[in-house]
Image 1 (tube, rainbow, N blue to C red):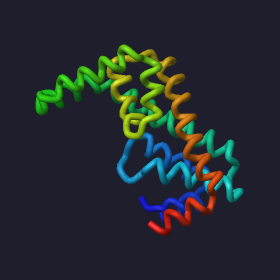
Image 2 (image 1 turned 45 degrees about the vertical axis):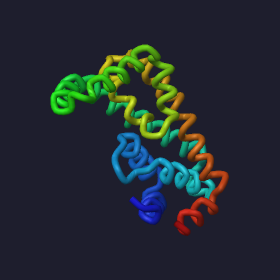
Image 3 (image 1 turned 45 degrees about the horizontal axis):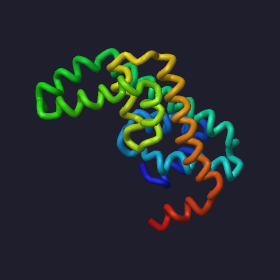
Image 4 (image 1 turned 60 degrees about the vertical axis):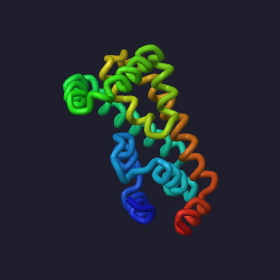
Length: 171
């Protein structure tokens, strides 16, 4: 999804588009890059189309919902998927087990830190569900990480405003 399409959706559908597109981004679907979506939501807030607080509430809610969907997928079907995956890719078993152990040992702190790292911030939800991390701890640590991540990117779009759009248009 390109910047022009996103701008059109955000302008036409407002808060609903922001929520849906951020939700899809947190599901780690291709074509929904956070580095474009979040700043653009901030630009929309800077233009006065929607309030900054409202954008933050929408993006955090959408991010948490997307993360919970992946958590539930990991919790309900993760073991079956993992066994099948390891059957076809046995050389990756050690790496996968190492990463699962990292999440087990670090728990909430590990999820929080992973939510601040591109790519890992969405993927971490699946192993957290797979290891059956306490849901309350997962939600709290995820929410804190999501708030920081979204604040940085939405805030960048809000502060830089039109400069963000002109930068993208030059690319």
